[in-house]
Length: 499
Ligand SMILES: Cc1cc2nc3c(=O)[nH]c(=O)nc-3n(C[C@H](O)[C@H](O)[C@H](O)COP(=O)(O)OP(=O)(O)OC[C@H]3O[C@@H](n4cnc5c(N)ncnc54)[C@H](O)[C@@H]3O)c2cc1C
Picture 1 (cartoon, rainbow, N blue to C red):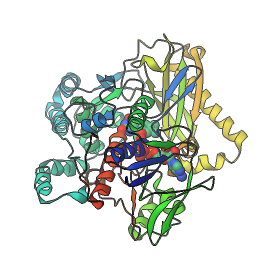
Picture 2 (picture 1 turned 180 degrees about the vertical axis):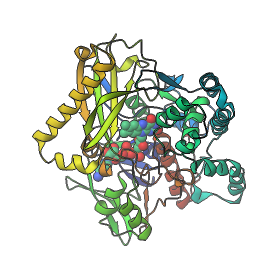
Picture 3 (picture 1 turned 180 degrees about the horizontal axis):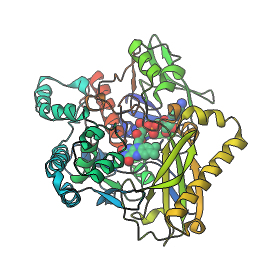
């Protein structure tokens, strides 16, 4: 008889775990509180425009790279259309001078040398860093818990790369740029890459992926990716229940035995995986009974992604004058926009002029996003009138600043939509609106957060709350690895295709 797995959450991790569970002969049931799958990997339609809420770039779109095989197995790669950008972003200064960040390191190097030939040595060190990281392909076949001595020897080959990561994690953009003689380049490089403190490692890693064409954009956006996974899951015979909020994880003799839904019904299985928010899982669904100091400290210190204000715009305009760029066009303005008490003096406008499926012909959808303070929005949300008015004010101000950069555009804006941290909390349950869970850290590459809870058996946690840094490829990996761990416990050989 098939053993069974209950999966809490139908985001990418839940769907991936479901697919691999089915491939390995488990009866799988996903319970998702929303009316659709995807979690934070989603989009929403307004007045004929699709506002994409997640797809900037997807690691693993290049055949032959380690993550690609997950997307193949999960039914995405055979069906998707990938767009690879030439530009990472365009960064304008107050005089309107544009600085291009190219995805191709050779092209970027040439461009930087034209701007500052006097900085040749530093520029070449910079682009060498990008090329070095472009060769880095994370070993992803197995969860660290299952590594044997052969795997450890294989992992030793990674040592030079890990040393390089360690080295560049300690150098900030600000410190690196200070070595440049050219004042324009010194200043612009620092600001364009997110300010003084960003570690060079992150920049090399992001641009390395782009140089390698290893992380493209899936035409159709986030929901298209979700559709591929959901179709694959259903084709494999998986069950999915929507509008099914899990209220408790049922435990008997310190073993997870099932779940209780908000409607009072109970469902039982041999294994329970929570692919939902980490804090909810540990402290609400399990009443905080299975924790230790490490878990407590992690949640007390909350080093998580800052939640977002996300302004979606539907614009009756072609935007042939704005080059397609992953992170969009960043430009400054004189009068700051105040959001949750913080002054914003520039905006990054991401125009989806590279994906015609998201807007009516001849028109474009775009978004502008800012990191924001969660507590402010949580408080404001208690007063629906004020909350709504504040969202309107922010949309007005964004359109006003946009109009100063693109005169006349205000008349062409025919759709505005503002999502706040509370939107993410309501629709996905993610703690404090953190859309990608824990911030990147060394653990993002070593997978060292435990996937089990102390004292609780037959239970795993999966997804962005046990894989710091989050992201869609990590969700696929996490689903795969969790089923590998379960197969090991059941003495089954893990397989990735079903005969
Ligand atoms: C604006 C934005 C941009 C992003 N850009 C990128 C990008 O360019 N590239 C990239 O790789 N990643 C990106 N990400 C991150 C990526 O989308 C996420 O890390 C990933 O999709 C997380 O998947 P998950 O399944 O682990 O978690 P989630 O998507 O949070 O899924 C958890 C699911 O559990 C459900 N749930 C919660 N509580 C319960 C409950 N009690 N009962 C039942 N169901 C429950 C939720 O509704 C949700 O569906 C972005 C995310 C956002 C928001």
